[in-house]
Amino acid sequence: MKSLISFAVFLVLVTAPCLGQHNRGMTAGQEAKLKNLKDEVSRDLTQNILKYWSLKMPDNVNGGFYGRIDATEKVYPDAEKGGILNARILWTFSSAYRILKDTSYLKIAERAKDYILTRFIDPEYGGAYMSLKADGTPLNTRKHVYTNAFFIYSLSEYYRATGDKTALAEAKKIFDLFEKYAADRENGGYFEVFNREWQRLRERLIGESTEADEKTMNTSLHVMEAYANLYRVSHDKAVGDRLRSMVEIFLNKIIDKERYHLICFLDRNWKGTSTIDSYGHDIEASWLLCESAGLLKDEKLLKRVQEASVRIANAASEGLQADGGMLTDKNYKTGEVRAQRSWWEQAETVVGYLNAFELTGEESYLDKSLACWEFIKKYFVDSRNGSWFTRLSENGIPGGDKAGFWICPYHNGRMCMEIIERVK
Image 1 (cartoon, rainbow, N blue to C red):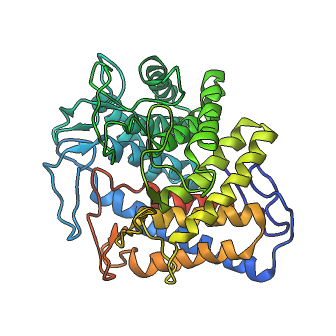
Image 2 (spheres, helix red, strand yellow):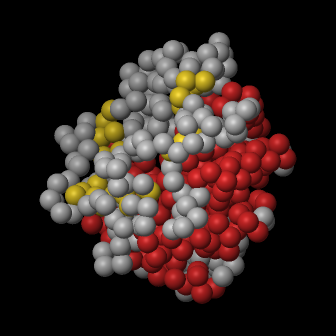
């Protein structure tokens, strides 16, 4: 992780060499702003986000966690239990325990890990199911690379927090399954949807619109993220090699070299098939690329990533609004903008522009990060019932489910923990 070291020297390198390149001293005003940001997100993490998920989500009848809580705080005990939801709960509470050393977070992480290993992992064909019925029996038995990447990410984080070798071994098994069944040997990267037996399916699960959409930026981003965490804890050469290949794919294939937005959907040869700029994914990728390259200890690669990271952050700023918030996406061909805003891209905006500030020392990036946090506090933090709202309507009305198949404490929880670790 990265750190803004003790406010004495600006952003001296700690463990990830992507950050802190210019070594300028910070002003007293910048120090004060960062300390205040850290204090505020620390409170939101511990007194709001983690508290809400610890108290309201455990399913004490069927085990694991409920599949859905709506905007009115109604729990749906019969809702399907998504793999993405459960993997992200495991990652969040494992990371929280690692950073904050609160054993109450370890208990939730253990609950998630045990439920995943006994219910989500397919004992016959390996990998994780997409979803379970409320009683814990398999429902959607597809092997989705996007979903399984989060199991690699979360199980490796549990190992990082606890040293549990069983969790690490399971993460490595999924990596091996990706290499055996999902890897595109000819063009690089991974195909994305498979049946239970790991036979490829041509289905559209995360926004693909045509038969040509065989690879997605979104899945590629989270495979890279997962491999970064697995490599961090395993130091496995094969994992490191594949992590490097994913970073190179972003640099050479997924980043639009003229516009520096990410290409959202691509064919098997990495030719773009979409005209959507996803601002949240842009700014999320800008800092995840830095994290991944920093682990590889390659100065030339790192320099390329740093330069690209700032340019991606600049491109993403097209989605920033005067109120500090980030739009979801825009069709750059038609000009159509999705006016509704979501919680996750706001969280990634705070981290992404803090990362750009660390890379460059330019205060404008810090201002963007802080402005988005103020926007989050105003519209997304639910100070009455806890956690965050997940959607802001075009008319500025907060709402959306509080927990669900895609709605987890991962983006906002990770944002808080990134800031805690960076600002020390």
